[in-house]
Length: 285
Image (cartoon, rainbow, N blue to C red; front, side, top):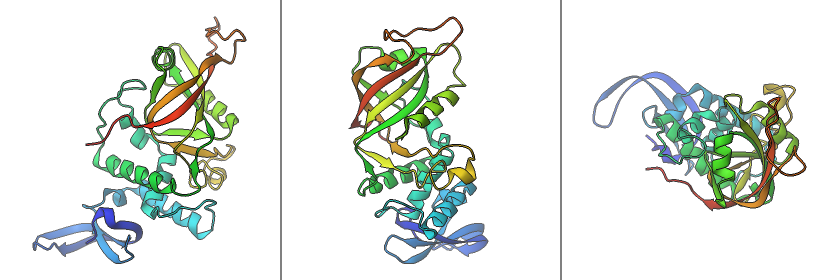
């Protein structure tokens, strides 16, 4: 059997197989997976070793990556990143909350230990490893990217209005190169927040961002078939970390720059310039 850190590609599956382990223990009705390893050899792996293969959503992302590759739709090089790592990133673009909910369990401000399930931990590790490898290619984004996110007024004040120059952005930081996409996200985000809130356009100077739009479920290759009538997000993904405020927050809606809440409930829009510092917020045990 292959160890999980050897696997680079899923070739096929065998369902409900009975087999003997090396210690002569009988295993019944176990799913086995035929895989290619990093060295190029072909081996079997069981569902106890890699949990990702037992998840239908992850298998769908594997199929999506295979489709993109076979149709030459990956517009940028993928370097040494594996099918498994690319599939993890692709699944993140489909269901980011699979890992983000655990990463933001303490909210937008409090940096707390991450309590991942086994599946979430496997997925997170593959996303991080895939991003590390993609940074070694022309996908590395060191220019300006844009992020739109709605915060409660309390969280906004804690992050951007406390006098602290450096602020944490918790969870993977999805950005775009199109400000109209960021504005659209502001309109639809923050619906779960009650009370006063602030819509924030972050103009971020990226150091370690990774271009993933041609992989993304909302990107140029897949948005029309999976999310009709939406624009391609032109997505650049950054990892969570500390970001430095390099420009004073500007209230876009009020010429005098003050943050005002209108009587009719209009939420203020604020623009902030940030710089990625590449300082991680926490490490996993």
